[in-house]
Amino acid sequence: MHRLRYVIGLLTLVAAVVAAIQVVKVLRQLDERPGLKLQVEFREARGLRSGANVRYRGVNVGVVRSIGISQDGSKAVVQLLLDPPGVAQACVNSSFWIVTPRFSGLDGASGLDTLVRDSYVAFQTPAERGSPLVDGSLLSGKERPPLSEEVESLEDIDHGDLLMTLLVPENHGLKPGSAVIFRGMKTGDVRRVGLAASGTHVEVTLRIARAHRQTVTDKTSFWVARPYVSGALFSGFTVTDVTSLLTPFVSYYGEPGKGVLVQDGYRAAALAARPSIEAAAVPAEALRQVPRVAVPKGDDLVLVRIAYAAIERDTWSADDPIQRQGSGVLFLDRSGRAVVVTARSLVDASFTETDAFGGAPDIDGEQIKVLLGSGTVLRAGRVWVDPGGKDLAALVLEDAPPDLVGTPTARLHFAGAPPEGERTIRAAGPDGAPLPAIDAARATGSDVHGGATTVGDRVVGIVALPTEGAAPTIVALELLPADLRPQ
Image (cartoon, rainbow, N blue to C red):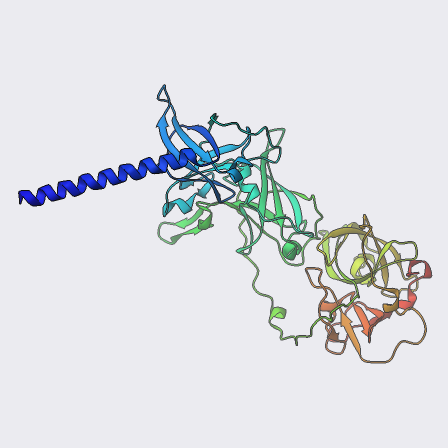
């Protein structure tokens, strides 16, 4: 028994000596390892250990040499060694912090990767870099990740994405990277959060992805999603937006077909609390089986999506809002203006409405917005309507980009006998992208209002006011005056 104890004690001593030798070797290697030695002070070490990683943008660029306590005992001093790649990124204005799991009602959850691995040190350098750090520098560390660290992890803004500002009464934990949700699906993210200069509200910059920007109109309601409990003791309770308990997000909703598309820079005020709304059911037309027809590759027919809104003022009854959406054909006229030819019934309520006595209506607050296939939204003015009363109108886009490309003249048929062949109809979808060709005999006016009627590869007319139960009416392009046609 004594011999066994002696052997165990000897093995333990040998193991301790070997471990000590390894520690000495590691320390010597760190001393001989090329790089930059830094000291960073934190209020607490938060479980950080010697040998832990130092990361920049998620890449290991250094190691923790040792952890000690400051002379006055008020700080934990972490000795770091940055490798050459880390040295190239570290500046006097870099921010260092210890990454550990954090759960906060304001900041949400972060550092969750350290639940299954050791804590580590991360640092971030702003775009406006300061002077390089020198060997032995003593820095003051951050107790939590800086907000700007989240900005760098966001996806780049793509051409056509909607950038807008949401004004909220109070920020309930939103930060860069927080989700923007529509119908339970993520459609964008928060890019920036800041207090207004007046201190009266918080300004939140939102990005809505190009593919979903048609979901935002001037009638859309926004709010900051927070857990909300409703119900009664005996009937049961319902918890709404429970997913926002740890990570608050921006939610929004708007009735399909209401409002007009908004442009970049749009500003909206958020509701103080979640409104009592229910998402509309799946529309019946979405269930209609439509044969798949691919959009021809290299097709240079430029179609745009048009959203129109106006108010019909009534003296004896409530005012009536008017909302319409459809398509148009874009081209450049002989003076270089961006022109969209479409149905007048789509963009002029005075053409379709009458007052209570059958006279001319009082139309107010007209707005015409055009969504390009690139995702850009532009305002448009109605510059011409057919004087003979035909359902045809021309719009001119405001602030059109100089590199805007329109439909080639060869694709537009303005005069002479129309080409022979089967007629198809082309329109733009809600996201501005062109839809596949539709057989004119099968098309319904509500789907293709203002779209282009084509024969072969040429546009011969525009789909006019739809007639219930009948094939779409076509208005010939030849009615357009010469000064609005391409060169």
